[in-house]
Length: 135
Length: 360
Image 1: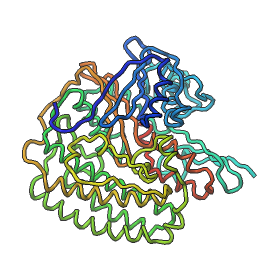
Image 2: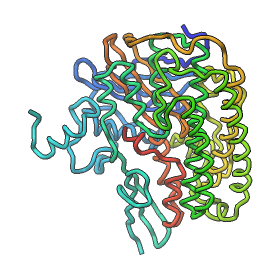
Image 3: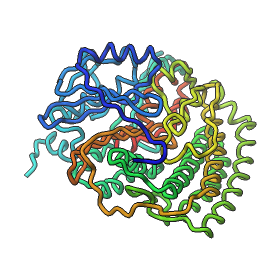
Image 4: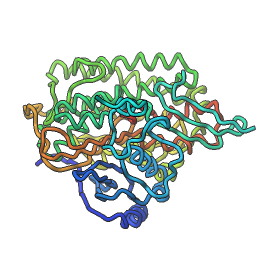
């Protein structure tokens, strides 16, 4: 173990129904939403974690295996909307209530990353957009 | 008359590609939208095919300005998962490079801001002074951009006594130049006219949207990961978190000037108190144990987050990178509203954006 200060990381599993009440509670407590991260689990389903700052570290509230999640952008404004929009464009996950009429991260003319693990190399998407499959 | 004024993604006034759409009423901006992703290189995906040492080399190339911050944050995350105890000398050397990087980044931004407000003579002077910091980084690492100073378990290069003395001498000179620059920046009429009352982000908005780093501190928000969640032995150093309450572009200039003095203070302490001993653990290619963490780091532009997931295998299972610009760019529409189109470039630049970082 380290003999100097380092950051604490607490992982807590929650259900999708707990996401909004938790965000309201955290905002009332004055906690900052550090980030919303996502990756694809071993079953090919999204794993989304809401990282809240705590003194000396991070509390990570994780929802595993859900493809549709409620948005917390009404609570944390653009601080939540941007990560939600980014994840929607890069992963097979939807945040209910988020405006999807315009892309934030991926170009409008290009395929979205939905259904693929987050952040596919761009040249693969270009090939698919132009109908050129990989050999 | 209402117009939609597009800026970018490729525009002579932008150093990096980003697209902003300004909704205007005459000269006044009534609303704005920002679109990102133009410099996406799939770096997160590439980390999944690399071991930790290869990943350090890769993530160091996410950004050309805060390259050390990226390598260091990834290393800190992996060390946190594995419970690796880094030798203190290695940590201090990391801090020295980190603070030099902050210095040169702040000088770089001050130069760009001066260029954008039309004060080109001071812009050139600022960048000339920045060269001394680049020289110090080159003396320590042998490089001017990607320093290659970080490894899992410590630092890769030592600072011997001769180098330490020379760095302290150079630091005195940089401090003198910074004092001159501070006096000019804080009293110059051109700077004041173009920055005071422009691009205001209130403290409430900074909290609501989640601004970080110097951008948040210029909105009177005293947040700094080095104090709030220390790492790399930052608890050993005496320094202040600078804040300013005018919440405008001028505040963002002042904050960076004040932070330069704090960085000089930290580097001087680290060089004076540099502990004896090893600089790293000599690990060749460590494996990332099964586990996950998210590590926060105070990069020059603000809080840098690395979420690392390991499954005990040779490669990363997942590395997710979120940079300060991703937290600060959403504040741009709020800052632009009510300002004139002529100030849009300066206001966008006032967050010290790094779109390459953000798009990774």
